[in-house]
Length: 217
Image 1: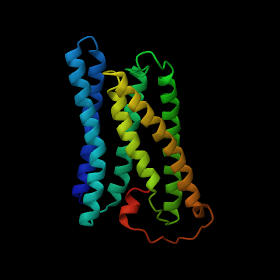
Image 2: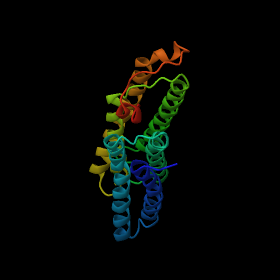
Image 3: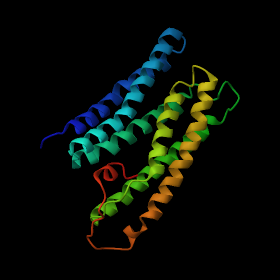
């Protein structure tokens, strides 16, 4: 099986998650050494941003070159979910700056609950898409799902840096709350818009572009 350039970028993004996690953990282990702490946080945030930004790159290359592959369709959404979920777990675990300088003591708890809600949403959409796939139905992308992705990417990056200054923590918190609302709304809207998946057993296929297929969420 030939691996396309877009899929290679997706695979590289998955492996990039490992140093992102390691550097972030190093930052938390060296909170008493501000130089190491600052450098590690910034590096981990940059690596995370690269992971998120290459998500758009591999999709663009796949569409531009006409090399959208089944492997890419499988790995691309997996990479997106893994990096977000793991970083949210670490953010909640270390609680670095989540209290916003003691002003909002329950922020970590709220973020943990919303993270669980977002994960549940992703699992539900994955099951829904698998049902559609079994019926040979290709579902169109939803703009609100894309907005959700951007908001969560930016907010998680900010929350990773929340320990540096309360303002960064507030920005990350507000964006994460908004992103969570978009996650719930886009999930409900996506299923409602494609409710015909539950109504038919026929093996018909919708005529949708490859760009829609790749980010159907």
